[in-house]
Image 1 (cartoon, rainbow, N blue to C red):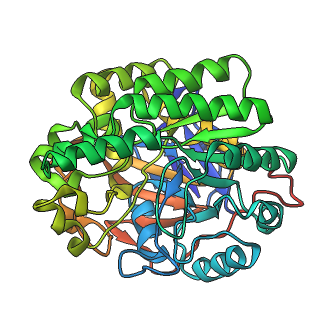
Image 2 (tube, rainbow, N blue to C red):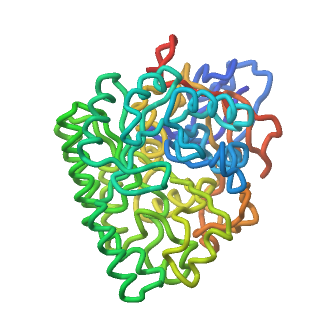
Image 3 (tube, one colour):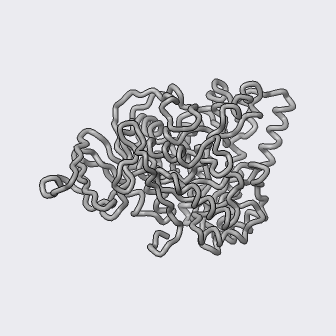
Length: 452
């Protein structure tokens, strides 16, 4: 296939170029390839923007276990429709992915209906350090830990347990993921506000102030430095926490940060307006915090754009209309992540190459997938996304491929539209529809082909 006429961005440049695709890989990229190429299929995409398929290393699809919320099919359909061609799914399923056997069973189960390529993280619960290496051998990219309570079957780790886990992760040359919030600060704030009778949406944010994230991030980075462990601090909502990670990385520590579309485009005012439909952890922040977070993004100090897509049934959110503490924590965001950030970013000065770094090439390098993923250079997988610019679409939940069609971005105007997504040379989303046959494959963190 020869694609011609489009502007194509990589992590360093944006220019009008042609793409030749052969056997699912990029064979050649350059100006005026059409004249010297006899392709089976020519596609004129003049006027469109082409980017490498995004990589989202932080999604929750609820399979196995709670598939009434979401399953791997509907989750990866949303990814394809949102311009995300690789996802790495988190271990908060039922049961959580804490052992080799559970990891292998999940991998084989969900792989039957994945519409984009996927990897999996394993879990860390303070009792399963001996399972890290077996899960890594099955393909786990790393291990997720909480520094405060998550779910009954997924307890948080105290500092001693976290240091032990990081030491083992370092030994097997894997990666530690940490949800960083100070448990004591959050628990005390929650108790105080409940005692005051607060049940409104804004109380959720006030119970989890920025210092809770900043302090825990500092502690996680310090422990990881001592253990010599690669660390990814997930879904950061504050500029102060980004500063902790970026300073450590600048000093040579192997540590990276995640930012989310909701923290870059929504404020805590949404908690007042939408209540449970805007409840996530960490919480939405002030306008000043959003602006400060964008300063770090534009300076290249934030590493990965992730959705933290976490679907809930409407019946699990609705109790929060009367009492915010009763609502589940999480948002439906995956299909909209790229278009809302591209739109907001264009207004703030984020160019296409910077978006490529934030959405794909940075994480591909971090996880050892570059240049197979996160790139459109010769030899890369032909994973790409076609965008139309200058549109004025209004986010309509009815157009989502989610099982439950709600999102905090409802009614938001976006200036970018995903026209098509390609995975390994085949269209997986086109003409507003998902290609019926699942084409995604499991990506191992380590294999004989040297991906890592």
